[in-house]
Length: 229
Image 1: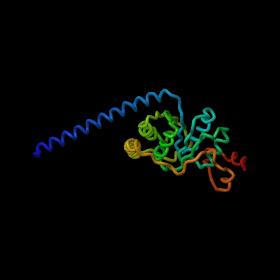
Image 2 (image 1 turned 90 degrees about the vertical axis):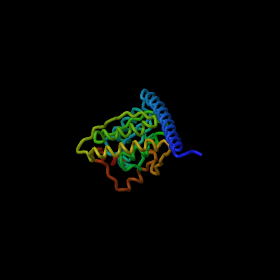
Image 3 (image 1 turned 135 degrees about the vertical axis):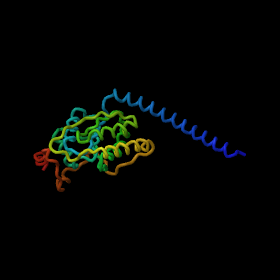
């Protein structure tokens, strides 16, 4: 029968062994993930992720869609659905690979709900479309959350006009970066689903014309809307 000293020694040894195993596993995962990121960085972009908050970002991605019609696009809680449809129609851009996700209510949610979609698409390199008003918080969060799954992030910064609707604060950045670090670990074993995810091609504009919707003035979509009526 073991005495008290021996039991303490065995517990300490077990803890050290556990920490050693954890360190080896973590180190191995970091090496593998780093290799995946280095490989992805040299590959072409295989998805566009648009963070909602400015119609200028959707105007920009519509132009990208014309140049890269085979690259899927995910717009995370952007402009009203009919406004996005009008933007792509005006740009004569394909909409078959454009998906709208309307579950997100924050920048953290953009990645929370967007990551499973990108994983489903087997994305390895994503072009993140945002604006200076989101910096550097959005890019840091993207590199933490998406990078933890081997997805390389290439920022694409779209300049806005006028007064920005949001402002960045150090405490806001700190909170979101901390949440991202935690979720980077949890998301390895859990994938949330969004109940409001659908293709832009499925939008019925005739039905939307009976609804009272408004688009940002910066979009200048008034004439485009009249053409559809």
